Every structure is written in C-alpha cells, then in structure tokens.
Length: 318
Image (cartoon, helix red, strand yellow):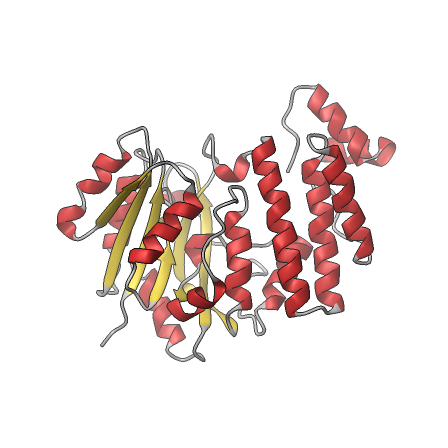
C-alpha cells in the first residue's frame, strides 16, 4: 500500500492565508494524505476557516494558546502517517511536492530525509524565484548540512522537509520551551537522527516572508532567550554526535552569530556567546549588516555600531 503522509498545520491568527494553505495541501497529487490543523488559541477567524475544510477530510483540533511547538506536538500525537510534512499556516506546497519527494525516497536508504527547492514570496506565489543555493544538494552525512548552515546561514524552512516517522520518533518532540528558532533546534535533531538528506530539485514549496509579527522577525527578550537556548541545545547535540574540527568551527560561527544577535538587549549573554565562540577555536563569520553599518563597525567596532543603529531608532539587524 502507498504510504500515508500526515500534513501538519499549526495555526495562530492566520485567517488571511489559511484557506490558500489548506487548498495547497488538499491539491497534492499524492493521494494518501491526512491533513491535521491545530488552532493554537487564535483570536481571529482561523478556527472557523479551518472547520470549513472538515467536509473534505481535514482534521481540526483546537487548543489554548501554547505556541507553535505545542501545536505541532499535539498534531503528531494524532498523526497516523509514515511520513510527516510540516506546513505552516501561511506557506504553500506545489501540487506534486510530496509525490516527487516520495519517489526519490523510495530509491534511498531507510531513514533518509527529503528536502526540496523553496522560494520566498510576499503577496503572491508567482513572485517566487527558485534560484539554486548551496544547501540545494544531497548531504551524506547530514551533519554536513548543519556545518554549512552555521558557517554561512544557508537553510531549509520546515516546509521543505519530508521526514519518515521513524526518524521523528528517534528525534523526539518539538521543544515547547522555544519560540524563536524552535524549528532550527528541532530539525537539527531530525537530521542527526537520519542517515542522509536527499534533495529533490523538482519538488517545490513557497515560503511566505515579510509578515508583521512573524516569529522569525521577533527580537523581544523572550524570543532572544529562546534563540540562545536553541543554539545551546544544538551545540551540545552536535558536539556529542560529531566532535570534529569542522563541527567545532561551525559552532564557533553559530555562537558568534548569536553574540551579534543578542547585543545590545542581552549584553552579558552576548559576551558569553562570544566567549563560547573563542573556546571553540574562534569564528570566521562576519557581522551581517548593511554597507554603512559595516563601515561604521570597522571604525568603532560592531557593538558600538549596533548601539548607534539603535539610538537612531532602527531595529538592530539580526
């Protein structure tokens, strides 16, 4: 029998985009899917919109607001699929995304995770430009993807992955303490529990960007603490899994990037992150900022440049 794929959609105040997201899930050419929406205490019409899709087989669960990680965990308890597709409530799947990834996985060793081509869009998916990136390739072992990510910032969003349930069982649940970078921490464990990444260039998905209030754009203290914890957890996991010089160098860059992101809101934690980077052999990843800020940083240092940027009433770059 063709394997069942569970499509998991956490939802919080996503009424503007949820219908399009669910239509993209229902349009999958892979016939054996189940779609599970978990409404995480939305205050808009998201729950009502999700329930309009119940006659088409969409399962809808309501819970008090506990965060996206808790919503995904609740869906995983219900999910029956042999593969899991995470789909945020504002993103979109190409109709053959899952079919193409499953076709590739049938040719790969068990416990291989599939990745896909992805592109950002703001208003309409037609805006998306699928431009190949360094992360768009196979990775065996999968730790090599994490080394690339921490050294350069290249990534895969949650929508891009298709994951065997056996890998998810070994990796464990989403960490419900985390908000910012909960996906980065989770998929680090997923990849370390897998045997490799099979990239599917013809499988496509659409990642909505630039939304006000997006979790990935938050820089409040709770979000920054979450980011710090996620890097600490990933660092411990990677050093236990593969304490190589390449991993140590990548983690030095991860800690240094964290030092940049935490300053000036959490100055003590920023200094501690920079110290971790030095302990791991020193970072090579520069502060990512615009040309004027970079020139200012060369004159007065990146910390002073960030303070000037903040004083001018602009959000610090992250």
